[in-house]
Figure 1 (tube, rainbow, N blue to C red):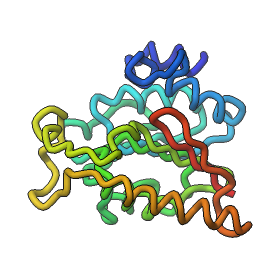
Figure 2 (tube, rainbow, N blue to C red):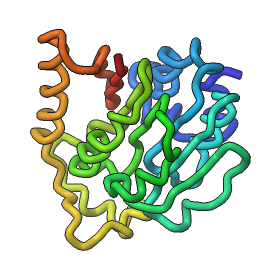
Figure 3 (tube, rainbow, N blue to C red):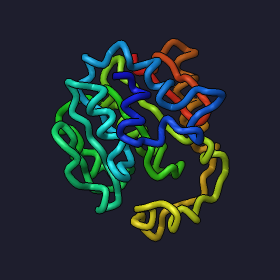
Figure 4 (cartoon, rainbow, N blue to C red):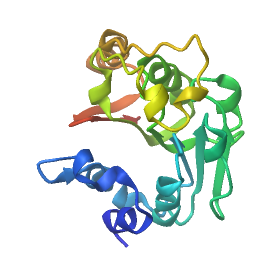
Length: 209
């Protein structure tokens, strides 16, 4: 079954109009990179679990993979079926990340977590070294990184209030841009370990060399 069909079957929002631009949804973007390697993927991690819809979708899409989810909300960390594992904790907490697929490399990381720039940058730095050669790291909902104060999400989004009182909810795009610039600079100098960094509407896709 196509990823777009599985997304609808599992009721994930990655294929809806709010996550699409001119007829191309997140799921269309994912499929363009992943359709040919479905059978080779062994380990997937999604930061942000919510109700587990995306975890179940990835599990069906990648028949040989163990799918991991990390979420700070205790209500989201529960059994979702065979080959799905969940970890309770912040996406930027090294102790939580260390519980994901111990001793394994990861073929696909999706950051659909807190959407806080500080967390997103920290997560990338923690997880990029664990991405397999030829693997992907995807950041979603990038529109929120453009100097937005997303403090209201403490109330609006399930689990966001589980972040500590010192959490910075003011997103500064310059912090994210510094991460991109570092990786792009290395690519332009024929250095580093990034094969490409593709910018899509509301998404960024890194592929590892």
